[in-house]
Length: 483
Image (tube, rainbow, N blue to C red; front, side, top):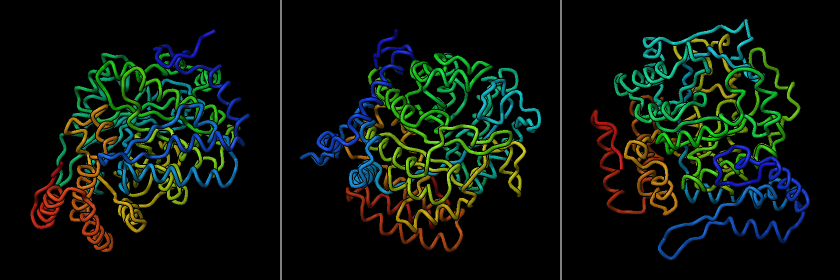
């Protein structure tokens, strides 16, 4: 029997089944243990140090699982307030914007929850040419997007690493009017150290790979055929990515495939493992849920969870891994996304299309979608909605382009200096969006927000420089200022 060891490079040891079962048993036994719950919450609170920095201890997977199991209403309310406090301490009121770009839905895997599975004969199979990609990217630039997450099915013939690398090169090469894609994150199948080095050399931002489920037995049943069937190879992918030089990686599970409490513990164990072995935890954690799609009925999975539990999971993730970005996609409704913003989410997609080639079509195509999109608003509508709630929509990509990745980004986040670079960068990129793409109504709200938020930049010199750059953006064709 494998023994739990977060420093091991073997999947069965750093995501240890027996340890998860023991954790869930401990959490259930202590879900009403108020002294213990209070001590866990106290440990997680931000500590404001004499030098002006803020520190958060975070939580172990076992401590966080106790919070998730707790069903005492006033304690849950305390968790939600703490999650929002932590989010504001390290990410402020900024919300980073991105969009997915689906390159190809050819896939050789048999994943039973995904319409791209190899046996689905009635989904339309599409692979974008480089000219198709050019049209898609221009459509995204014309909305105002600066950051993409590219997606592709696993198919060594149709979607080899050479195709992915060519697509990345094409995306970065397109400069249309004032539009540029400044950061390409990559969500493709687990691969080799050599291929991760190639992705690093291509200038990617974050490498994203969802585990789908950490329960090995369920994983093997849900992935009956194809290379993704190899649980260990898939689960150990982030270690190979780190070895290949990619220090920003993004974790996630597909909630609804397995019991949420099991997935929650496994997700945090994976984060602890990365921190223990590589000195830096995940750059992002995503929280998707199983949704309806072609050939896929979410009701076929008996582990679906309520909106209330989904929001509680988000709050507990934010408390447990305070410095990690949290992503929620357009899988979720406007209402759920609104609630999640208060509980720790720091990145959201806007105007997403999950079909291959979907951005060039006036009508949203459904014949090649990976999942149904619940929030179908335009990017302008999402930007305005965020600002009306007091959030700064940020199109910033500066940290990645200035080399502030991995542990360098985390140290910046931990010492509070994020307010002197990320905050002004958010305001400058928002100004770019307002000038180049926004509706009159959105622009009016945005300019007022920028004027108000400039006053919150702590360092006077930074504040003055940011204000000067914002005037340049408004009154000239100069773009891409960054701290």
